Length: 294
Image (tube, rainbow, N blue to C red):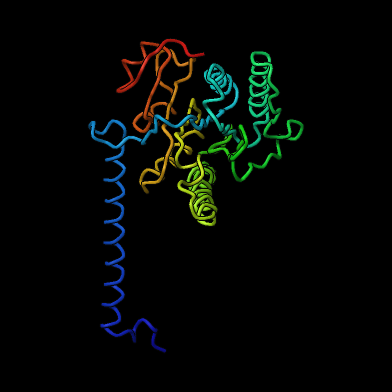
């Protein structure tokens, strides 16, 4: 019996070949456009690269911080502890899955700031804690931050301790998809929801609800590897011309003579790359030194 491929007409073979060639050509063109777009938006690509648009007259700035566990968490919380939380709100603390200690430390910082505000102003300050501190391991992020001072978002680890390099791409992809949801998909849905509510308001309302896309946003990173997934999600927003936070990477205080692997990888993509030891500026192509920050 003849094979079906043997009975395939030359015209059918040419059509299949043409379709495959067309698909390959489109893929190459799309990949080239994506690479050129990425290069054009890099912070240090030549001086004319577009920077995230800031709104200096907005009264508050959304602050997102990745708590990378252990010393990374301690450094990150120490850096933001001196900020005025009335200006930097709402706040989002990203923690790795299973890192309950970092979540507890974030809650403790929020409690200390609330207590300090009460003592200085003698005002009644809501004691919202964003999560049940007794059951932080099962904390689910709230869908919106409107009216809430902070929340804790749990994301999968890009790579677990002692994990095989063979399985790391799988866990890194899962972590990346989670970051894309929280940085790209969820804010997009929230903006659509705000716009829908605004359109349903009575006539005469001159401006949409405040916050959201109209608010500045800063993402503070200190390592380790999972923070790269957050940065990748931010760059997806920029490639798609969606609102994106300013990326500030602060190298760990423990890195005295050389940059960490996370620092070397994220350096070309960070809007501000800050080191805590002056000698690191020799190995950093771009960077800032402002003394010890922790």
